[in-house]
Length: 288
Image (cartoon, rainbow, N blue to C red; front, side):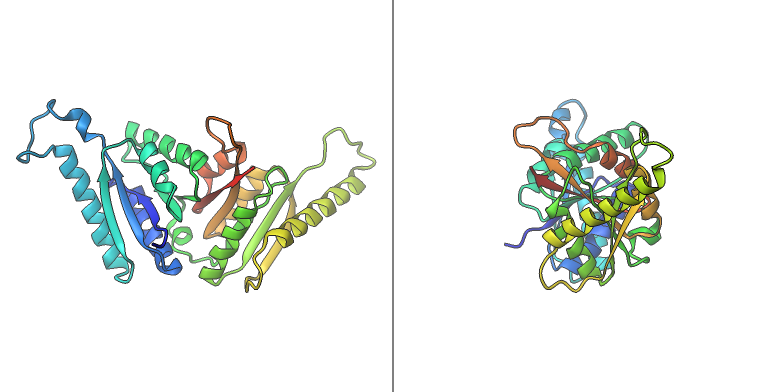
């Protein structure tokens, strides 16, 4: 069976935007779409009266959310094969479990406001930092989410030469029929003298450009038809990449997964991108 694209839903506006994005992605990839609602209604059974005979109100609400999202998918693209499920579990555990068999996981960037919004934000970060498959956090304006700009951006980091992220970015650009903009940020060490600053800057720029080309050539798929633009830019990586998202449809970055290491494995730059990017962000894990 083909691996599905899994999207977490909770009924918020942000999750509906994620459903729309995932529908378009599933159609472009020819992949099935799976809707997942994680609800711990079992913890509340016996504490509240059952509005519906024999069924907890929380479970009924979760089922309604999934059914409504499935109908939204069918109205947006009838050709997408969609399924949905409500699972009695916390969101992080449920999504990470689904990610073992998924092509990718998709989440919104906000919750239903207040404390729920902050909790869902932490869920998105936890999933992006621990999932075994790519995680796309859908954020940004409507033009960025709907692919108006025709541009995929790939961040290439010297500390994380993620071949998986490069291949994912090429695949995204190919199915969208758009160019791939590969960016490598670089900076001069602060201790270098002013007299040699100009020569030093040129050397660092050339070194970054060579690294970018070498990394792309080593990992890019054979026979691709993607137009690639390479750019080495001076400045902090998070600022350079955030600026590049203003007119982008998707930003792709890699995230190292070191065997045996516990906790979140995301990095400061990726953390900033997930919070502030002007377009959807795809975090692609790479086992180190």
